[in-house]
Image (cartoon, rainbow, N blue to C red; front, side, top):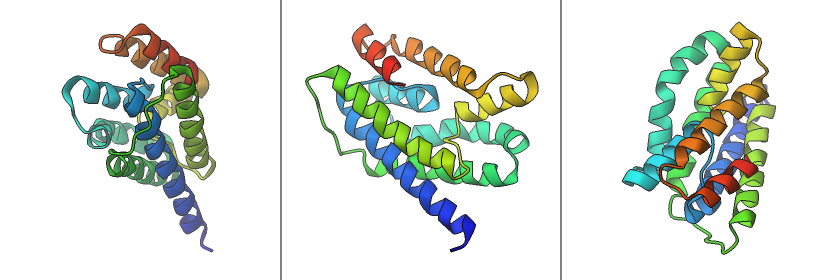
Length: 176
């Protein structure tokens, strides 16, 4: 099988898992998330905006940065992954599982999103958003990607305190 087709299929599957997890666990239980996806969730909670559409629109300006930083192949996979993730968040928008235990909900959300994102990363893509910014900080400032993503995700979770109660933000931060 063609390498690009195999990578594309895996990124498609990883994006579907992530889109499912966002709706099934995060949105259903009012949990926060890090990065651009977290900002998109916050906008949904505050204004009712569609998370998938908002996620894609917020990523558009970052694609211009990504073009220079990621390289041609990774950039193409990133656009595909972001588009597919946003599409699956939209497609799965009515699938929810409300749980009584927010700790379990946040752990399931973290595992689901982690598996999906791991697949996307493994096959050459990124989820866009703060991953692009983290790549830029690594390239130009030598910062480790993990540190940059942690900082961006922490900022988003702290920003979520505007709308969400402290317990939901803390549980979401622990599962990121």
